[in-house]
Length: 124
Image 1 (cartoon, rainbow, N blue to C red):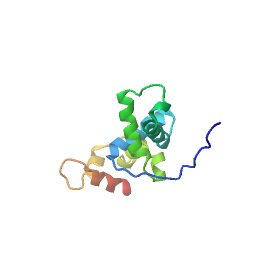
Image 2: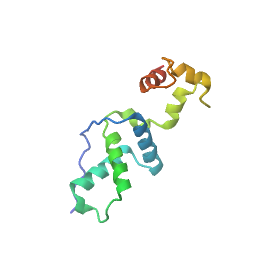
Image 3: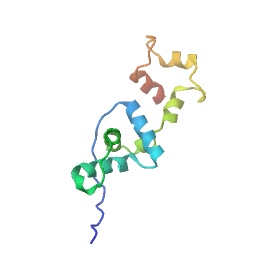
Image 4: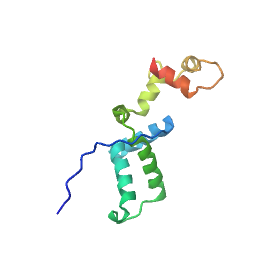
């Protein structure tokens, strides 16, 4: 007898660096699965390790931890975030980041683009 599927209604919020989130979302997209699916698989494997017949390699476990971090976030927009969107918010012409773009992004003119400057540029 099979168990009925439970409704997925609970959320888990975690924080992680933005580049990590982008990399994880790209990896999930390349693998053809959602971040939530990757996270659920990781959690299920830790709750009932006997359900899996093979051990996960350490690199896969690390990827699953990243998946847990991103997939657990309750914001629906995360599922659609991709590296191209992040690039496009930096490059004015959407083709390349020019020296003028870099000068525009470095609002405090310290030679570095901070995360706060990145966020401000993408919010415009």
